[in-house]
Length: 251
Image (cartoon, rainbow, N blue to C red; front, top):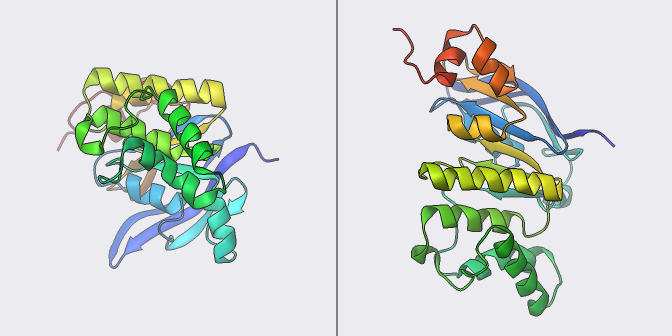
């Protein structure tokens, strides 16, 4: 079996006359935390949507767990989607459902478990992210950090080997953000989960990432890749240096 959980080859995305990025290639190894980083508007979330099969790239190829995300019939594509979990930037919890019902939803859609089994699994997932006592709450009754955790619990419902997280720390206070970072590392350690995380939060990047790629809007693609701690200390690229040192770029 390949050591690569995700393989992206020569991917490009163009909207009309605007090129978001081109010739993006990288591999994510099984069991690692891989971060897609960069400034606002560089295409991080667009790239994530391509990888998880929500948007077809203008060019290139994406494989997740050995499955080509844009080849084969709808059944093969659906099977691939059932093997991954996705946490969207907003959390995307259904406001009319309790946290328990939100987490149960993938189990209702993709398993034949009886309700008692679905509920037991959903409660276990909520407990795993520290929300065991919040199962009956509605999304409007919880904090932003709790919503992010609940969204991760829902993404974990089917025990996918790969989790994709879009800006998990966005809008959170430093303490709550650090708690999410710790959760990601704990899930990787205990479950062997592979993570692909989109973020521009420098503290989180340095805390969780094994490797990363950095996208740049002006370059329309990848301008750096590797261990973010080494990039911070060694990169001579002015854009990369400015990002990792929180400095303004010279005009």
